[in-house]
Length: 270
Image (cartoon, rainbow, N blue to C red; front, side, top):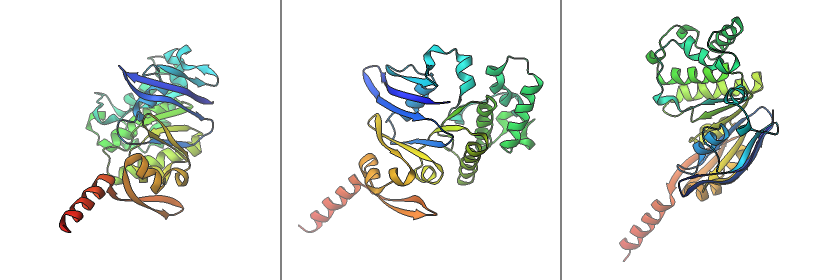
C-alpha cells in the first residue's frame, strides 16, 4: 500500500488552514506530525482520512483517489483513532473493539471477527478489562481501547490524533511503545499527530514539522528536532542534547520572554 498526499489544501471559510501539503507513506514506520497549535495538523489528518474534503489536491491509496472509494472500502485501508478524551460508549470493551470489524463484514460478527478482536485486545494488554464497561476505564485504558478498535479494522495505515494527550507519563510511554511494536510486528504504517517534542523525538521514525499550514521540515528526528527549527517554528529557545542516539529537547525561553528580559535590563541601567 502506497499513500500519496499530493498538494492538499483546506480552508475554513475564507481562512486557508493547509497550503499544498505533499508527502508519501510507502513503508511500515511511525510518522509523527508536529507543530504549534493552529498550523493544521488535525485538519490534515482529517483530510487524509476523508473526514474533511480538501479544497485542493488529492489523497491517493495505491494510485486510487480516496474520494472515489466507498466509506467501507476506505475503512479497510485506513484506521482512524481520534483524540478519545470525550468519547463514551455504554458497552463493554469487547463490543467497543468489535465496532472496528464492521467495515470487514456486517453487524453480525463471524468467528473470524471474534478471533481478531480477541487477538487485538491481547496485543493491547486489555485482557483483564475485556468485559468491563468502556465508561468505567481510565483515560489511558480508553486510549488503548480506541487504538484496539482501529487495529481491529486491519488497516494498512493507522491515523491517530494526539493519542498521548491527557495521559500521564507512564501511559504515554506504554502507548508509544505499543505503536512501535505494531509497526514492526504488524507491518503497519502509522501517521500520528503529536504535540510533545520529546515523545516524538524518542519514538518517531519520521517527523513532519508543520508551520503556517505547510511542511517546514520532513525527515528523521535528528534532522527535524533542532534548536534552529524549534526557534523558527515555535519561537522558543532550546537546548537539544543527545540521549541514547535520539535528540532530547530542553526548553529555555520564548523569544518574547528574551525580549522582555532585555527591555527590563535596559531600564535598570538607565
